[in-house]
Length: 383
Ligand code: URA
Ligand code: ZN
Image 1 (cartoon, rainbow, N blue to C red):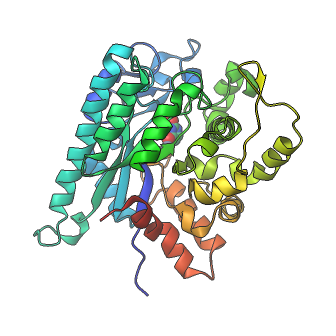
Image 2 (image 1 turned 90 degrees about the vertical axis):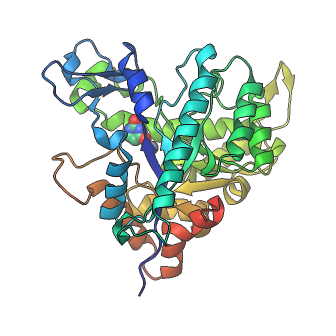
């Protein structure tokens, strides 16, 4: 049996220029270099920046795997990944001032595009490189969401369509600052729909620290609560707000890839739909408006794609049932969730996702191949 072609659509980078920008900052997000030349620390979540934690221990270690493409290629080699669609990691460009947002977006997007182009030239079948180095890269671009007006975001979306290795955009849930049900985002949805670029929606902000018991629980349990629960709920809330504000009614051809198998959307879709059916009032600008016209089930089958980064059979089965095997795409979340001892060649987080796919689709090798790579090649046109 030939091994399926594997595409990782959920894999992040912080390009070197972005790392330098974070190094120059003193508020979240920032990079701190310990005085003893220890591994730099990335202080990325609001809960990381707790003054009670010594600065050298805040956040998480950030090594070359975050910015060095060769480390990514080795990781791909070690985990049987043929092609990766890289994306800037959270919090993207969300925190930039309006004046600098567009310049940074263009810089990062051009950088991602040329990184992919250079790697793919080396991976040309006629090149003399050994087989292990023939790995290909594509990328999702980043948007200048804090730009002074949405036209600038729209302009960047259309510019991205002209870059050879960009296959969509990655975005967080804050939108222009008021969430994804903000009507001011309509030009952005329209541009994404018209250009048919896939929107990769990814969490960053989680839930307020109080939802987890405040700083004391962060000190006790580290990132477990924000990452395991805060991230998926953030995605769930963001997409539900899009649905409730009728984004999918106005933009029925919008294509959106949800991180972490949709947060909890596949599991809660029935409850969301039922609550909508039992709600008497939908208000906008002080007047009555209709609720969403298209059901969440329809949106899941036509607008939404889900990654398979859910680390368990039960979650994956819910995603398959709510979406379908031809709308799910393999991912790793590299370089996040490395082995704690830093020694293992094969990462537990990646093995767990491969295993969940095997367990959920044991008898159906065609669907395994679809989910591991064929879907991504088709949906993202990875030629
Ligand atoms: N933690 C993050 O901050 N981002 C990810 O994508 C995964 C884990
Ligand atoms: Zn991620």
